[in-house]
Image (tube, rainbow, N blue to C red):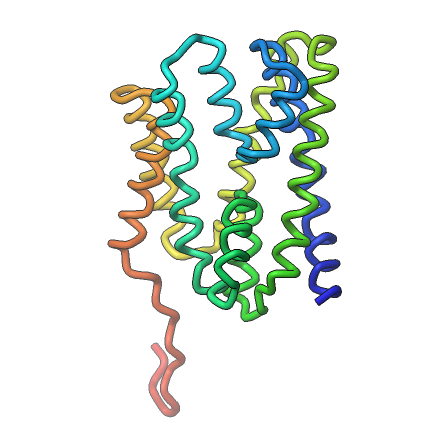
Length: 237
């Protein structure tokens, strides 16, 4: 039990390093849009979803109706429904309370590592899951507070080029699945549909529409069959 927790902590440490800039960026943007340090920290603690927090904070600053903010955050986080369905077979032994906690702490790297661990035959214990999630959660909330505290010193985060970090981060996650069957086709269709949706429907719905297009294509395309070894005595061309 303890070894699983420790293994989770060690596995998520590199993720923490990569998320520090995003957490600081969110804190700075939150303060620049009128939130206090306490409000920005509380949002990180109870929402815990970097991309949707950035979307929500921008909408808060433009006096957008609440229902639009809720739907926009739902659109950005829609992928978590797919994440939850994908990892459910590997956490079926969790209690209902453990599942609720696990889904709250579900992030992109948590999903990727849980799926990889389960598919390679290693047991996904609750201790491992919590160890992996704890580092990311505590780090995200803490650095968000620091970013909010020093946000006024940073000024406009986009002027420093910090706004490119999020796309780079997600690109890294996508490339982590590059060895899967039909990877290029699914990524290509998702990207094209997302770009078209952004032009026709608008942000942030293009994120979910592009993701759904990729999921539908992946379901329709048969997985690549492994090449069967030639039968003994069979002539080889």
